[in-house]
Image (cartoon, rainbow, N blue to C red):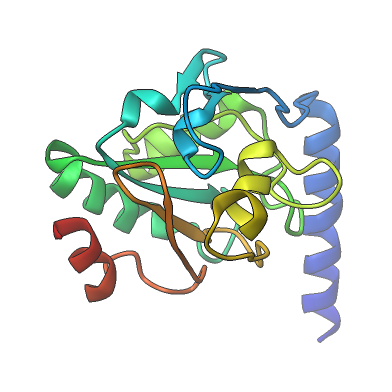
Length: 196
């Protein structure tokens, strides 16, 4: 018990130090395109992991899975299933978009560059990755405010409970559903949504 507690404290301290040293503040950049209705994710332009603009209106007609990711989480191996799903359906109008976030136990402490290197080297991630953001709290990124607010997305209010929570977005940009962090992205319900 004592060793487990010491290991947890050590992990938290190291993560906090890495986060402070990385100088990587969460991106708050979001631009809204008023040509799309408020209940459409296509209204957003955000910053990608390389610092370029990523315009969600370019995904019009494609189904989107948005997921908050972390490199040092017990759920991090989900990158493998996300990449598998992306490989299978990327040519069939599916896009997966990852948003690194350090909101839970400092499990994503690094810079955008180190996150990108980790994802590529360890899991072969090729789906779009965005700049590190905050997915909850008073610095919540506007796209996550949209995802979690019924008033904005027109369907339901949720809260981001942990890393690897997934949001399903229909081809017209409207919100479809939230998938629990521990649920498999390869679940039959998700596959049916993609294929129908």
